[in-house]
Length: 113
Length: 114
Image (tube, rainbow over all chains, first blue to last red; front, side, top):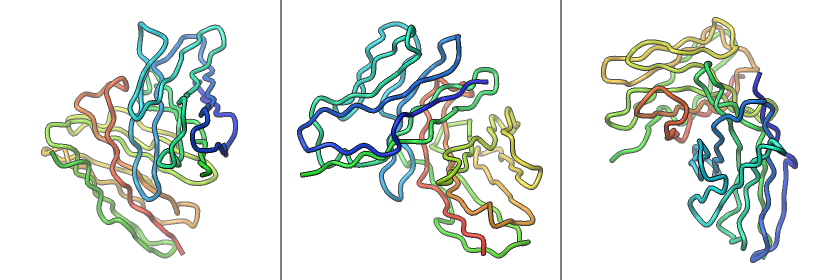
């Protein structure tokens, strides 16, 4: 069964620093992959998704992610963190025939001034 | 266009009671999915409805059920509540039934079981 692993439940960066949030998936068949962001007391908002084609995917708010099949990874990056980026980030993969999304446990990003 | 609306926003129940949560998808969306979010287990898929039919179901006991109406609005019901059912229940809608569709999430219903 597909599983998604996010390394690091908490990541703290300084404002202006690089943001790197790690995600690995388990399937031998590359699934569709997603990154969502959740702000306090809100639902999830899609940042970006990878289906097929270009392996570097650009999303909203300056985030991007690179699909690396050889590493079964889909890490999320942003060159320069902003205070408003503080939130919880979830990586997800499609569940194939199950028709659902399988989420990682989430990474809480803190941004220090 | 209005987003996904979930009601109520907060709910407090006691063990053994039952609860019904409501979700109104974005206009024109025909698929509604439900997820349970807890600090320990993270986000777990409950079920998905498309055109009033349950397409998929996650690994939850039969106490968890749902339905979708002809206007695409959906309800989920939890009977005989247990303390472990305390969670944020998120509803998401999409135009089509496939997971490469963009999912739009509501703000959730925070259920506390005492």
